[in-house]
Length: 559
Image (cartoon, rainbow, N blue to C red; front, side, top):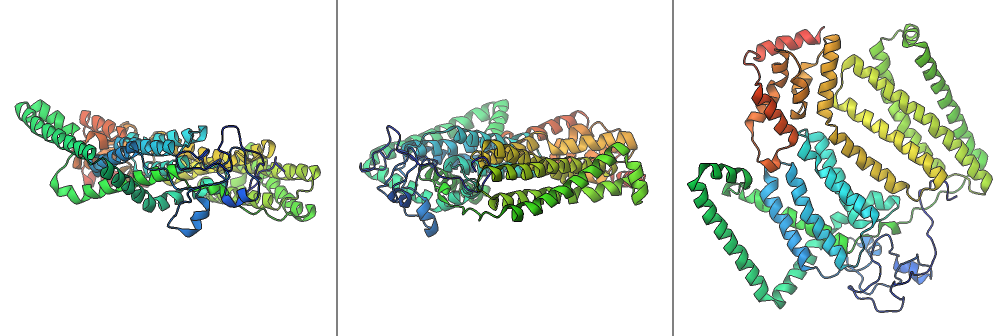
């Protein structure tokens, strides 16, 4: 059944590869053979005599973890922390303190780079080799952190940051199974306790064995800070232009924000050490065994699915008839308006897509597995169901397009269409897994989700919403002014195309928000900077006061 997607993958049996540690050879923290989480094997499995290719069969130093049920999934204690790891963690904390207190934009990438270096140095000390998927997760996470630097809207930026954290967890943990993909962030949370303790032990060892070097480093930092402060102040007093440049480049370190800055320092330092500790000794989520479902008989398994497939076929036949016969006959028969017909269908079809995926998952767990005839049956039934589900996805997207034509585009509507399209992609991936095997499926599904979040942020949803609604206004004369006021600065280029006084009414709230706070360069997004340039060249009209805009909003609402 290797050609059918499954919730658990069979373990390959084999012998150690050339160059790996011998089973009876002593394994120190610095000299054990393979430490990549995708190569690790539980000690219980090694006692049974079966190991995966390239795996060590013994671990000399078991690692204590604060959560007991995680202990069996952790291979060994991390290697002693390297000096480079400590410096990278310190840089992460300092940059967090100096840059993150003013907002989130390019500073997120600047903070993430030393944290990633800390993880790399720790993994290198533990003997882990970077793999292709590790690079995919790492580069993808950094790319997602660039979304706040490009877009002013908070909601796609928040989604991108959360997804970047998940990808970072997968990068340091590794793994290829569904538990590794879904449970990775738990290992990072566990390392929030073990990571700082590990770093502190390394710092104490260095301060005890080389007090002179530590003292020299601290003295060098102190002298550097004093020189920069004294000469920077003198140059700033000598030239106003240099003072302005210095004020734009140097982060604000006023005493009033001291407690908040110290908290950011601690968060950055602890986070970097947690990531580094996880990279040095990751939780082996691939060890989590997902029990296979009990195979059912052909009739018991196939009959419900065949009936469901027939229902899908009947619905899709009606959709094709509506598509070629036109909506007028359907609306006349049902007594609905065009907008009501569109609104009624989308949410039900979205739920149908989600439930179809659940049906496929449970059907695969209970699929008959007696031989080639069973494989053909499973492929035929589930493949047909997947194809019909894709037609449902297309119908749902078409319904939402009709809905937008009637009511305009909003954040919720563009979000659920993106989710529907991604669910359709997942169905396509499941179909491909039925042909070529499902070993790659968990990681590819996770990568597709991350790519979707990245594309969603890069396309600038607020800008897309404004463009679509401005076009709708030009075609129909209808415009939701109140909704446009709540968009972010990303929408300014599209709203700037409106004619006065509607333009100034739509941009008035955004302009006020931009005037109220001017963040430093590292906390200012490209969308916000572009909006400032547009509003500086053509400010909002003073005639567009509250009363004029309120009357215009009511006029547009009831057209």
